[in-house]
Structure formats: structure tokens, C-alpha cells
Amino acid sequence: MDDRAIKNLVQEQFGAAAQGYVASAGHARGGDLARLVELARPRGDERMLDIATGGGHTALAFAPHVREVVASDLTPRMLAAAEAFIRGQGVTNVLFEPADAEELPFADTSFDIVTARIAPHHFPNPRRFVHQAARVLRPGGLFLLDDNMAPEDAELDAFMNRFEQWRDPSHVRAYTVGEWRGWMADAGLTVEHVDPLTRNPQALRIRRLDGAYADARRRARRTGGVAARRAAALRRVLRDRRRGWACAVALRRVRGHRRTAG
Image 1: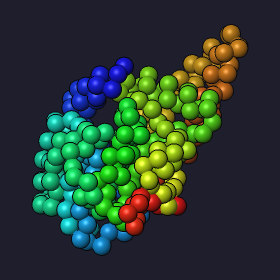
Image 2: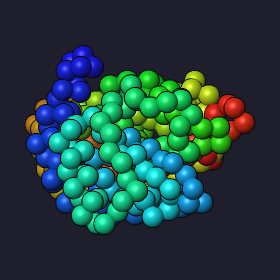
Image 3: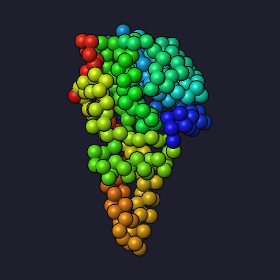
Image 4: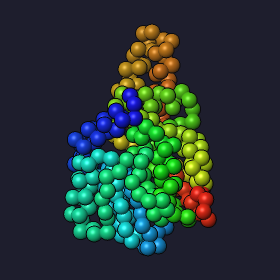
């Protein structure tokens, strides 16, 4: 699937589910929201950009702590749902702008903080996304990335992403921390902090994985070989999924070049 087809699928899928994402407890009340604000340490005078805002929960979490938030999203129906939700909370310092994360329509050095939460695994060109985030950051600005991360183990990485694609056709790839570090360095960012987050696993996803594991074990008993290796891989996936693969990465741009948070 080419980049345009992926983005069209994302718009179709997330547009239809927009209200569900606004109401999603995992997105609205995840402990990573408070952690992102903690990592940012806003002073109150910042202009912030939230990329792929989804239901608007990150924008809403930061709104009381900064001067202005621009919430952006590729999907117009999702952005409209986020706007209705945030306006309904009486918040007035959030603006809403349609935007492709890989082609941001904002001026260079125009934001103090840039965030992207639980979305970049849907981006077909993460390197381009990182460069765009770095471009719009002011010197000394902070880029906060929070997403599912694949393990560095190549077999687990491949299996995890294959399973996620079966579950969600708009899933492009959960990237490794090493891959993100490389793209950030290429964009002139320096990683200052990588924070593995402990969070409650999503029960439905775990049940699906448990079911897939049980099925793989049945096949392994009958056939061995590839089925046995898949069952073993899935067992490791379940173990690591229960630990949580979300990771917050804070990045900073300082003194005319871009640094990341460590």
C-alpha cells in the first residue's frame, strides 16, 4: 500500500470511529498524559502543537499549562470531534487545524512544544514526520513522542507488527527506540530522555493475544516446526505486551541545533 492509500485508510477508519476515540478511557485517562506534562515542565507561556490529536486528550491535558495549543489531525471528522469535546470542557486556548504529520502547514520555529501521542505507528514516513516536528520547533523547544515501541528483538518486532496489522489494517509499524533515535539524530535532535511507561494493558487486546496463543499452541502440537516457533514467539509477545511497550521520548532543540531529552 502506498503512502496516499495508507492515509486515505486512516481517514476513513478514524473518521468513522471519531466519537469512540473521544470517549475511550485508555486515551482519555492514560497515566502517560500526566507524564508528558511532567516531562515538558511548561512555564505557562509556551505555544504548543499536538500532532495527530485524535480525540484531543493530549491537547486538553496541556491546555491549562501553556499559552496556546494547536491541535492538528489528518482526519477532519476526528478533528471536529476533538473540537466539540474540548470546547465542551470550556477550554478556549486550543485552536484546531487540519494537518498531515508528514507535511505540517506551519512556519519554521513556530512552536515551543510539539507532541505526538499513540499515533506515529500509523505514519508511513516517520523520518519525514520527525523532520517536520524538528522544523517547526523553536530553538530550545521540546518534542515529546509517546507511542507503542517494538522490541529490539527482530523476531518479536516482526511478529508484533504482523499481529497489529492483522488487528488494525491502518497500523503501519511500531518502530523500535533505536529507529526513532536514528531519525531524531538525522533531524538534528538530541534525545534527552527515554521513559518506558508502566501502564495497564488493554484487556481486549490481551484477550485477543491469549486466544491467538491458544490457537498457535494447538497447531504446534499437531504440526511442530513453524507453528511451534510461532507459538513460542507469541508467548514472548504476551509477556512483553503485559509489561507494556509504550515509551515516551522527550527531545529538545537548543542553541540553533536540535537536541533530544535522556
